[in-house]
Length: 316
View 1 (cartoon, rainbow, N blue to C red):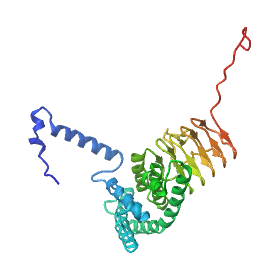
View 2 (cartoon, rainbow, N blue to C red; view 1 turned 120 degrees about the vertical axis):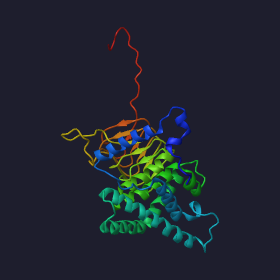
View 3 (tube, rainbow, N blue to C red; view 1 turned 90 degrees about the horizontal axis):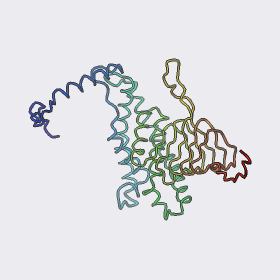
View 4 (cartoon, one colour; view 1 turned 180 degrees about the vertical axis):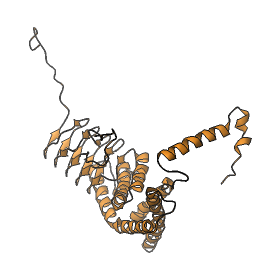
């Protein structure tokens, strides 16, 4: 690490910039913020976003070693590689889970109970990786079958932003369910920043899920999505309203996002809000604004523009 230069000797000071003054003002604001959140002195460290980027990449390589891992792996070496990567990545994940639990507790050091809980979460997550791989296989197959531009399964895996976002979501969702919601949210947001697709890890999404193109897709925390659902870019599965309590603060954790049943297709720009149900086999057209449930087999499109001639004031 480069040697830090003493602020008082900065060449910027000669240009009229008082570094010490800025540092002091920032410190005052930082202390006030910590006190308002009851995090005095040195607050526990958050999980590291940089470490989680590496963990997500490591887990992706574990799941798909021949395409997302090292090049030229052989049948003899692939299991060794997967075992090694899994061991390294799970150790890194354990450190981050401990950080989250310590942050939530607010204690100066992690308790023995939280240390054991972090180990339990990490072990349980590892056992769920085969199921995650199976779900991702169905998602990749759905993308390949649903996009005429896809030339191979491998192309879908390494090129499609929808698959990248879904991979991060499926990893994050298990961590969310196991008791590490902050890490889960951070992993989902890593994919969001690179793909433009936002999937809250609390959402429940069944297999064979396909997001085509994907930029601008938003899937809320309490959304439920069935099998063989296809979304296009700029689709929103969001909340219709945000209730507040008697103090005017937003009520957290209430069920507020749509249920999308099996075999539904939602085209680009559609906005679906509130705890409504899109019935099985329905098609929602582009740019539709929908705030009511629709029965199975529905086909919803924008209202058609009427063009009528009025003679002699008729109809006015």
